Image (cartoon, rainbow, N blue to C red; front, side, top):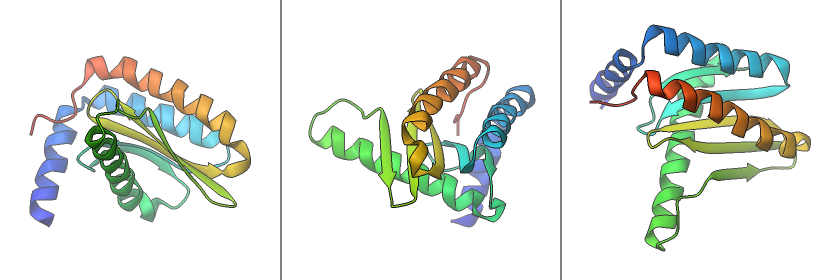
Length: 144
């Protein structure tokens, strides 16, 4: 399992051009440093991290992989009821909010932050997704 995950990760990293990956990392880093967020990550829907900016860097793979899993599971639920794909998943606790948004057909953008900023974060995730979507014309996630 670990070897096949490493092979998938290698394939994805080869598919993302260095320039595009750097641009994505800059978008996430700029956003993460301007606002008080715990984590923001772009992940393939296969669960392989593409880029992130996390307060706790050791949580990188878990946050990325589980966010993609939540998005994928939600899409299966909606599909099972013959509903359109969901645009955004929101997880809330007393002090935090987790937002997960699909980008194109093969990526998940997720962020975790204080719950008192939820409405602002919803607007921000749309803006970030749009910027990354524009870059997605220059790279491909997948091709495994």
